Length: 630
Image 1 (cartoon, rainbow, N blue to C red):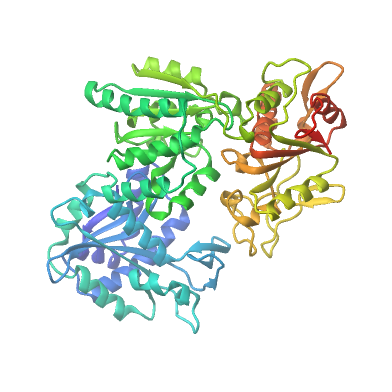
Image 2 (cartoon, rainbow, N blue to C red):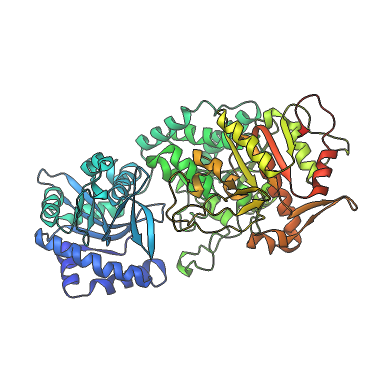
């Protein structure tokens, strides 16, 4: 999908007649169903005129121009795709990233710089890297760029028409040498070089022929991309399947064969508690399906988990890891298999109050997912719902799949691969929180290192000692403190304060520029600097650590007089959760179950409510080793 398509000559004329902005606005409204914002209109007015001047100077006439071209299966748009032929007859598409930047600073990240955008300084991807990734995406996922007899060549570049290069320019620092060789950067003082670059790559032949191929060819991951992602996953030996995990894995290939043969929708539901290997099955499925040349997407509702997986996989395969609300406009059977991990996070619909009517599918989110593929795999733990609006459950998926006429298979995982293999500990946590059945004198057992500490400061020291000795370890807490924006210098305020203990939450998703060593929220669980912040359930869910430290806050407490769990919304700072009414207790029980089950080797906890601490201690039992109060 694009907003504008024409010959270069017509594009230049539209700019000269001051008509391009209105044509873009009308094209945007037709494509998206709503009016673009003032900042976007202003960017078109400035950047497209500057581009037209360069194309006119290059003498372009028959080249094809696509503006705001939407990358298939993503929300990303390429500013300009300029189509034509090189002198040797090679069909090509210039991928041009346009920026209005005037200044720039160095950034700590290997692919980032800092510029003033939308009223403040932000750490942003280098424009040439942005264009390079768009080009790589097309080469990996768009048949015109890899499957035709003469594939199109995707040539990335960036044009910063307001920018004057300065001495020791951050945009041209040494760390970007290889990038700039592959994806050149042109500024306001490089116009002649930009003109030569354009002529060399697309200055010959009828570009509308190339433009037509870009618009008409279909999206499908290339075999090269599939093999790349499969190799990354298969290189991690931790993704080994055992027993019922392998049975569930094999069932997907059976369902896929049946779905293709019988042309029926297939649904596979895999249920399991924390640490039963649901994500291991999902990762193995992605690798095996891609290796077998089936298209597969790994779907979650968690930004932190998805972005971390994208970072691990690398930029080439990142877009195979998607979100559950990405399929509103997906055509039927666009993908062979959708693997939805943490399916309990499925919502009623993908749209929200900001979604234009033209983008709403009229279907439930679950129906969108099932419609978009031949085989739907849902990995689910019904007791991990921690926010209102998350309605995914095995029962809900089963009922909806039956209504849609799907063939359904169900599997349940029981073996424990977290908590040192202690199924007993996981059962004990659930029962202690009122989420499962267990006798009053049941205990967590001695297989898993569970300890209760007297203060958050002592708990923090123990977790840091584990991290210092080479273990993965993190501090987490219930959402019982405010969550502040970063300070002006990019450091984080100490929001989580209990007596002498003071630590910041992990950074907000929209935190902007952060000080050196502080990971963005999506990478709190993955990068080493995360040990210095306290994570909330939204950044911790889906991850596991050797040792999990948990501050059990005052928003949920055990009442010994009644034997009931009580919620105190005045002690909770999650605005969405605290407005959940009667569901608040269950959501908080699920939240602490998630936090207490993140550990592989041990879980250390500190209770802020004395009565709740006494209750948990009463359930510890007596052990020579393992579970204990410190």
